[in-house]
Image (tube, rainbow, N blue to C red; front, side, top):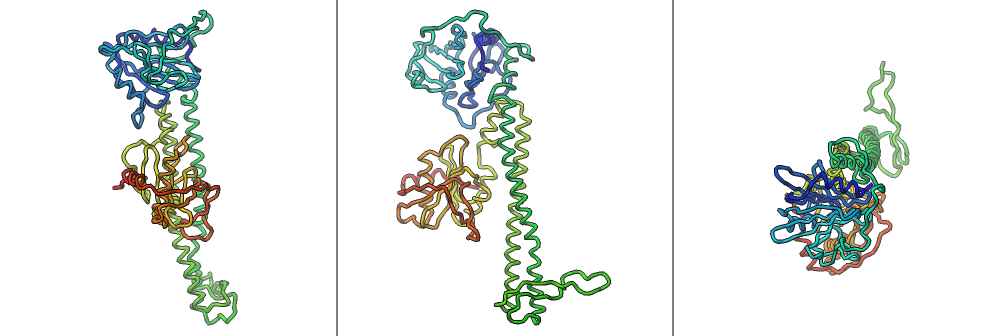
Length: 482
């Protein structure tokens, strides 16, 4: 629910903005910005939200998280209106458009905050009405740099009768600004704590269930491989009692000297071992020893996977607890967008990731250089919606594009990854080649195939001519690990 015109007037009257100096603009998201203002020992933080269903302008008493990278509109405000003095602040009629006049040296700016649920915007113009920039650039409305915006002159600026709307009765807080800040924190649509915590549960609990199910299967395999010692015992028994085996025998029934003696010594336990009638006792024993070595090696790999899965499970459980404990909806919204991981230097997970990594803007491309790296990346470092690329008809690297929530992979990023797939393949010297790509969730492991071998489904085809300039640019975007 957005603010009505009476509530906007009450908020403005409490804030008494004329005389305040604008000190800083902080943009937490594309539709959320804060203005820090100061006057005679009083510092306030104004919040402007253009979120549908929760359009609002008021003082906030909660910390505004910074964006991981500078966002355009905040940078614009910080270059133009910082240290400017607010001369006036009023609502135009009852149209839910706030006009704030700011003087910065010899310059005067008009800040328009339009709080319409389906067409909210924050627009800055010069004194003549020419648009300098807008938080949401809307060319059809002329709300772009160089356009014109002067709502005071628009026909139909209306005045409502006093009885059409009322100020909501809200609990808590001494001022209406405090009450509305607390109310939106709990009930502000997609930015309410309740909605954000539910989103956190949905996002993380699904992953938790998948990891728990995978761990259950791995532990079942661990138990199965844990009995691998019997293969070595069978080999020893065959060699020790090979004289009992006749040509063409399919089974050996013999004393199991590995079994503990029975109480009272009432006969030793016997074992029945399957044989290959075509093999000699020595070859048969060697086959069981080979089964033992394979099972032992597989057991080591499974235990590594279980360890990694348990560590990931612990991280997700800690992340969910952190999300549910956060009581600032603005911080929680940012944590959900970033996955709870701050951007910055290479994380420990990044350093552990094998292969080569290239970062183009906000997109991460990963290249596995051999079968072992391809397999490890598939098992531990990519997810179902990540994009997989591989050169057709040539051995080579698996290339992955990490998926970004709500984003489609741009063509330029696809071409970057395609060039890498051809360059790190057996077709490098051809200068071009075909490749196929699909999401990781559409890959299945080849049964009894070599390590890392997968069979794609729902794949698409792409023909790539290698671009030397693009490859040089990518080399400059390579993420170095130390």
